[in-house]
Length: 322
Image (cartoon, rainbow, N blue to C red; front, side, top):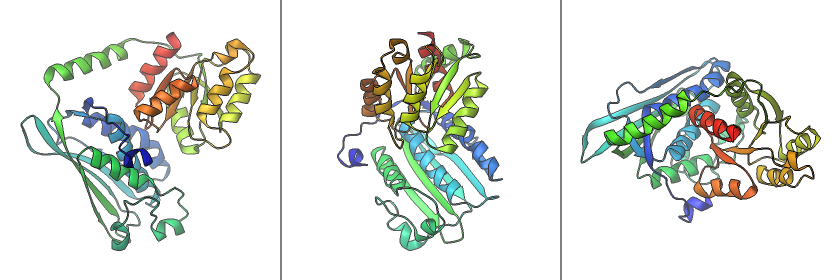
């Protein structure tokens, strides 16, 4: 939040498939929603111009925050939807888009809506419900949307659910830009690597994130061991035989010892084979300086949350092949 307020955050634009971004979020949340017996749906069929120039990681961060709130504040058996619309026809190479995140959860008071984008703000009903958090998610969301030149509108009332409307204007990607991006993605998809027999150490303190990552990685063929903080990860690597772990997927913000400190501790182990195990940051800290901080700590790669399965596969393929 301090980086946003001080103007130190730079957006990184590249051709991206808006429909694909929402579809990836469905894949990410579907299992959690199923466990709470929620009716969760994503709608993108109306969009004609789906390829635009945008900061995919930060748009993902915005949508992840809003969907996470919808999930937290909607009771079991509730309904949540995310819908993408293209507004009107493109003009001067730009398209106008609206994303609606809707739930039938506890809703919010008019008084809270007027101050909800401020740092550390929490609705009393959410505090009473026992939902944890810092109260920074919405402030960060608003900061990123403002940087992107977008707007946010909130429709809600206590007991009547919430609908959040995001509106953006994005430059449309040209056909050759789309083709170049599609070819790169297709080439990565066609290059098959068998992950069966590969063993990862997954370091993650959030139980839900742990379960999602385990499900994705096990479907890719990996064997997994887990640690709930950086110190536990260091201990497990130090006690292992060289080659036992093919790589470590390391969260950054964790109790006891964070991911940067854990990486430096592993790199300092006396056994040089253990000290050289590939370590990949897997974190929601996805600004450019976060990627650099991961490299400076001794990590080989950076994977942004929410997890994009294609990016995860491509990164793991590259690291494990080298």
